[in-house]
Image 1 (cartoon, rainbow, N blue to C red):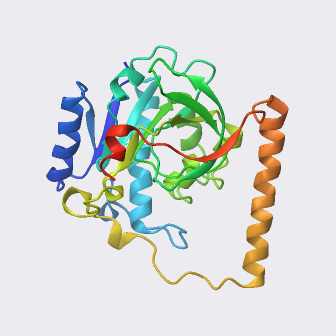
Image 2 (cartoon, rainbow, N blue to C red):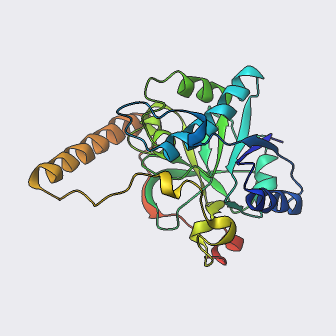
Length: 266
């Protein structure tokens, strides 16, 4: 079974208890990784990220470095506000999960996510497939990553200049074209802020005050034109990358289904 790491601030014992209770109920154990917070570094001048966003990214980077240094072939990486589906233990025990050069698997969805995915590839869990991710599926609360991909990410010059979920699972990070990234269907993880209780209790984030804020930019003609160009470039990359491999045949854009025990909480 794949090793598991979760990120947690020492002051957030409520979130630590939240994760540990889930893991115990699922028959799983995990290693706790102390979160990097804005007090641990100085935000570089001109950084496009807020201090909270950079702290989040560097927390995940700690695990990536650990995987490289300790030669951990692959691991499940969690944030401490995650909610996990009942199918997770069986998925982690699937010996064929990473067969075929799989480099990462996004387990999470934001509930409203619509993305282009390739044809279903069966896993060892009945009713759960992994589908090649061909567009953005943002979120970084639960994903599987290989050591090789972790090493590549740590070497990227923009590793500290893109918000973590955009780096891993967004158009901007370009991993969906350059690496073999998959999504589980149904999604097997959500964050607490997606539930009825929302951001109360353990769902309240310490990083909310450190995220970038401000009014949305005015949708001028120049901004709209820039977005159209970005979208066109994405569609062309999708066509070239997945059309040549044949994976575009049977691909579809859909709103991700969510595992039953999680959907009931939303």
